[in-house]
Length: 172
Image (cartoon, rainbow, N blue to C red; front, side):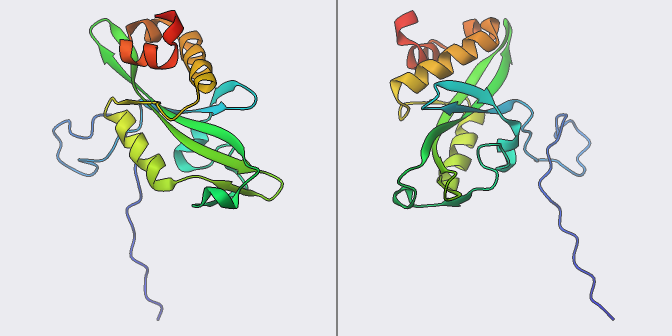
């Protein structure tokens, strides 16, 4: 007789507040409803949202084996994966957390570089309403700032001065 495999409880994305009083399954689970992955293509100077990045399944990442050593991907195309968290205050929603992670991809050898622990830690920091974009080059910051501003002017206007001056210092 075959042994039955133990059922594992996988990672859940909870839509409503997991601590709303019922005390049952899902209490303490992490909600990823308000975070979005935005890619900045450094060479093309464009930004785009790709929800697939939540599970490392974005168009940039598909078919690529990621290595932990940047030197192993010397001809990699540079990207920034930016975790953008939206929160709400009295005046309305705003960009609350924005953190940028480095990534390179060389499609010709199907290899890329990213530091998974860094990506996880920076996603967490974005969810904790931190602004961490200091490693980004100025051009990529501008691309991201213009993208966020164009995406929703109201969100941008209600966001912190720290975010605005970090991404678009000339406009402040």
